[in-house]
Image 1 (tube, protein in one colour):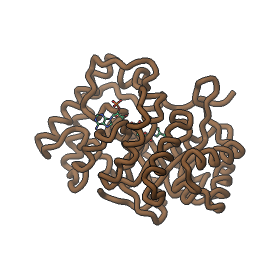
Image 2 (cartoon, rainbow, N blue to C red):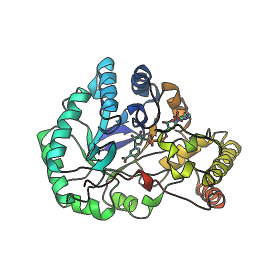
Image 3 (cartoon, protein in one colour):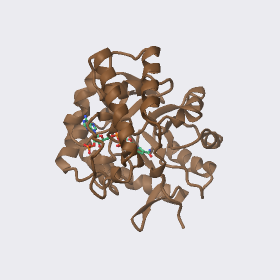
Length: 327
Ligand code: NAP
């Protein structure tokens, strides 16, 4: 496993994402499978787990806590969690008010069964709370020792600049995968310039880049992909075509599959520290060993860009996932 350094700590460049094992947005995940998935990370040299209170309304953090307790050594894990969202009438809303963050950190620590979080991230900027105010409360948590590094997620360069006027910023977590690269324009260069680590979310574009999604596939209500504009006809046909061509390229040039190519592509992007890979069962992480130890060339990068541009004529980003404002 390749590693990176986040605020002085060695972290694997692949991280387990636990949104799906929260169990409310991707179908049911049995608790024993979810715990086994969290514990299986060490089979692949992974130590990074990303979670959040909103994933299953606390369930994902509880699962991670149970996995850490079963494993027995807290220090083997690098736990990244978040605050700044809440659920009102079933809908996810921004809530980065200082009082809410101070309450959330204690709830997270309790669910995780730990005294500290390795990386604490603002889940999403709240339009009703200035970034400087949020940074101030994160700084207080950092100084108290409850959190060991400070992060944000889904923030623009301007928002990070505002945050950094008050507190140090060690990591940002933007959406980034082979099909969703808007952050490469501004946020990613900003992070590189200022030495801010980048944890890329939806590394597999919510399963599209695994190669298993068919153009006629449907998802049950409650599965996030049922409302993801990428997964709807007629656009899904373009994405599936791109995936098939990328898979053929990976096989022909490297004897690999599209899932390996997609993760390698992400890890080879300048400024990307780690790729967050959502997995529901231990076997979903099995391909991890085939992602490290090789690199894509500039020629590969150009060929991949050409495949995507040729197939995806009507691209769409992950904006549909943006939470709503409070009243
Ligand atoms: P993802 O990693 O792009 O895709 C995950 C899904 O792909 C899994 O749930 C699984 O779904 C499928 N999959 C994974 N490995 C597979 C394999 N080997 N073979 C076949 N299918 C496989 O999606 P994501 O969960 O959206 O993103 C990863 C993490 O990023 C999240 O868990 C979370 O930690 C983080 N994230 C953060 C934010 C933020 O706002 N900060 C937003 C989104 C995500 P099925 O088995 O159901 O097909």
